[in-house]
Image 1: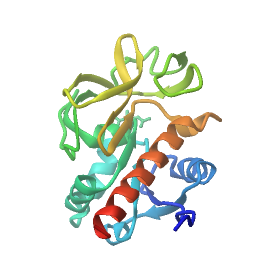
Image 2: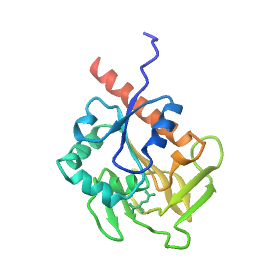
Image 3: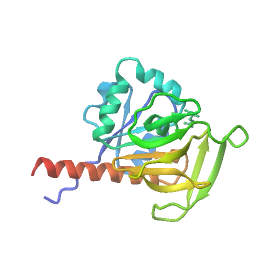
Image 4: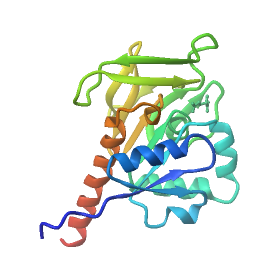
Length: 205
Ligand code: GLN
């Protein structure tokens, strides 16, 4: 009865970008990372990370075969965390320029929003996560310019959200895998564990 639950199995989309750093961060946060390269790899996963990279390149890859549709289905039922390009993929609407997105996060995201001079920067800011200010690494980062009512803002930059949670979905416009602080990945692993507990209790009545 009091058995420790098995660690959650969390996929990391491994098409391009820094998926290896996410896998490492997941291990350090008590999860088992699984590299995902095709729709079939999603089977049996408890959650998924969409890493940073170039969202247009990722999108092209996803649109071959029906990987895009499979991800849409997955994100409707299981926790998904998108960072940077991954956050762009999750959005309801993408601007600058417009491109197709999964629509799992009720937010409007503007790509490459900080312009050339400050396209990459490191910033420390307050966060709703316990444990004090959070260091955020931005690389050609997008900006979340509109959020729906169900979105909880966990950190911001210049008055706009940089880390958000909406039910089973999390998104960051920065790269939490590139710092030593594991609080962001831990928050996602906790979300996945909580969703597993809920689905367990619904199976057993
Ligand atoms: N600029 C990239 C895009 O628009 C995102 C950059 C990143 O993921 N670090 O897709």
